[in-house]
Length: 331
Ligand SMILES: Nc1nc2c(c(=O)[nH]1)N[C@H]1C(S)=C(S)[C@@H](COP(=O)(O)O)O[C@H]1N2
Ligand SMILES: [Mo]
Image (cartoon, rainbow, N blue to C red; front, side, top):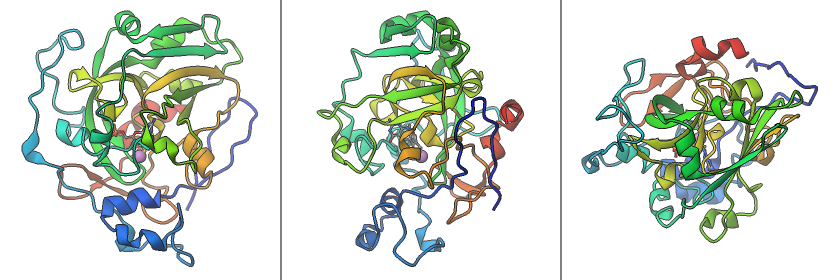
């Protein structure tokens, strides 16, 4: 299996790395918790090195199709009266219910369908976000000021998790590039590091000391400056639900979902490729770049297909999650 390599803007260490699933999340998805005792924390049972069909997650076709909410777009974030309902490829948006009841958010749970409830009491306001590091004009925003300064637009993006499920999400937000231009990165800035909230009183998952909290992520500066890269502050015309990363999260739609860090508190311009949560947790498992590629299999299963939440049959995974024409020049 060939592994793509990426050009480095700075002279720092890139090790070709391979993904593999988080076994616990996978088992929870598959409802196979009885097998959990057989497994090590994040690997296959000893002696197993290829995926078995039973290890491929079973993904709910629709979490609860009868519980669709009434969507009320907020006038301040949407000029049209209703959010658009499909992406540029004609894919219908995943239901609000599914987007808010099938979540990855390890600060709260290794599960997916319990995140909505566990995040109910999370306090996403008041909130501050610091933009600092190798910049001429560092700034710390309160959320209200940030929302006032940067007009919110709707972007309907596909989200592809490394675990092989996907959604179509109508975000509201603004391009990260606008914010980055305003803080004026210095010539030494080559990467952007994202740090997310670490609030032990509100986030029960932080008690799991095998993870390198806080959850951090990173992008190369040109990736961060790309117009597709969004700071999302809402979805379906509403403020971002807690379980989806309130009050502000990153969205880089051509990359696997783990790059899209939730509940951002700091955006830092840095010189070298930053350490990130998943890449630190297991360098073999989680690539820094994490660009969606059907031709680069996960070490133990194919990435050629995906299960769109709410649909019955599998879809082909698209190169760079269908955004190749827009981002392939970066690589
Ligand atoms: N802070 C934080 N951000 C996170 C995660 C997380 O556990 N913590 N999970 C990531 C993963 S693996 C995915 S697939 C997406 C899921 O976003 P969603 O729950 O809004 O669909 O969030 C990403 N951002
Ligand atoms: Mo993910």
